[in-house]
Length: 115
Image (tube, rainbow, N blue to C red; front, top):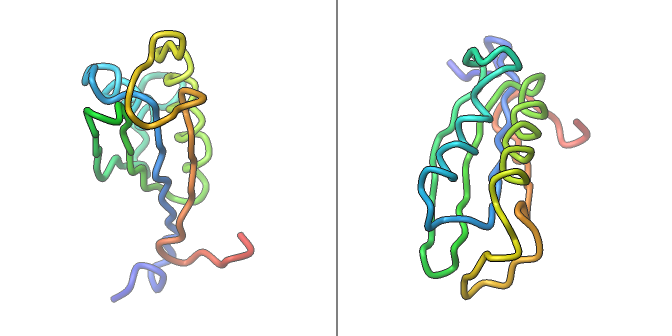
């Protein structure tokens, strides 16, 4: 049975951040996406994958969530990235302008293009 038949409306964000060499920072950013304002885990949010490239000093954190929770989860991760990544000292072979470079959102299930 497809998830759209049971009413799940899911989307994912492939959050691109300008850090890969300091694993604890990448993990803290991913963790920020998982927690609500009270520090409890969102039941409708998952980090599916973290890909880090040491040479580029960039990571992609794949965050999947219900449509209702994805925005706040991605925003929490972005805020953590802005606080943790110092672009004055960031180095890598990929040109980076900011702590968070790209925030693409992909539909997974039960979500229309318009949404």
